[in-house]
Length: 488
Image (tube, rainbow, N blue to C red):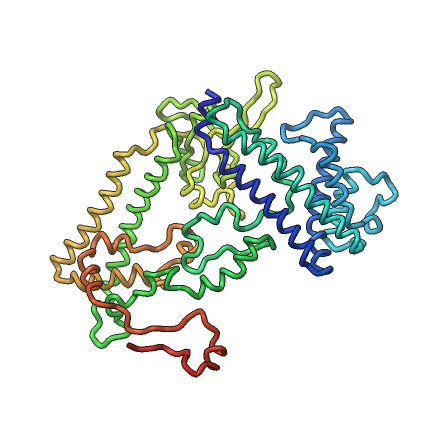
């Protein structure tokens, strides 16, 4: 069973992300070493040192627990001595001994590093010399290269060999070593997202590795090349806009009806898309939960963890759920389970919260829900292929019914024009849609008024050409280019 679960679980993606993050930070350190000014080097080592003061303090706290004979948590693990030694060298780069109490006590204590971390964050430290900064940067680079990247690469190789070996990657070790880099580069895990640059979104660089420097150059270019990023927004005048012509193609009533019809279609279509996505990720029965406040959400893959009885039907059992985000940005649902051997309670995962529910309820979001109580739950089947097809068909039939109504009321062209304006107008898109990956689209237009749309495309639609991506001052110096709109 463990082997089967291992094979169907995608470990390689999460390990790759952790390994790429560590590797990119290593390259960033190399860039800082070669090209940064003394001031920038000092500022960089300050961030790193503050991070390691916290980690070293946590490590020393675990050591003190062991010395006192206290029971450790499952997450209480110690780094190898050679790793901790490098971390301590970096943590001690910022000397805070004169800025907090206990300076004359034994320095290698968890309490010292806790105070030292707080003092350094508040700028209460003795700045290191340039020589110390250079040594700290090199120590950090070696730590990332020799320890973090190699450890994660080894675990990644175990995951890659999954089909030839029954051995599973050590997820605790992966989580343990991914904490060492002081930051996670902003592009890791997002480079393959096709929606990154839609509607003005972009990956904001937060470092200096090669990819992030490339993003710094690339973002302004992409933001100016708006025709390529948001093509449909560029063709708003495919049907005449009532604000820019003497004979408006539709009136306010048509637009209101188009807005309501599109909203209803999008609701049906998004449910179908969610069903299609769930088919690929949800294995076995799902758990439908309703909180005491009336919020509803679904937990899937409950059979994988074996905590919840997957017998179909309603179960009146109160569950105290805790939510945590995993490596792949999935929301884990956990419940306290009593260990029969020790009699102590531990948090055990029962499954994952469906992404759409987590987003709508702001589970694990900023100031969002991290815990909740479920008085009862229902175990039922996940979406089937037949259900998914039926949901897409329901959305299609709704769109066709809107078209039929338009024909019967002699307003087919008017409704087509109004719908296109609603589908392509950026002022019709809410802030929530702009921030989400599922943004305003033209699916309703294509389903309800496909023929009217295609007829407009029979005529060349460009009426003006505007130069973009050029500096106006440079263009003004040219004898041949005028930075105005060219009509043709």
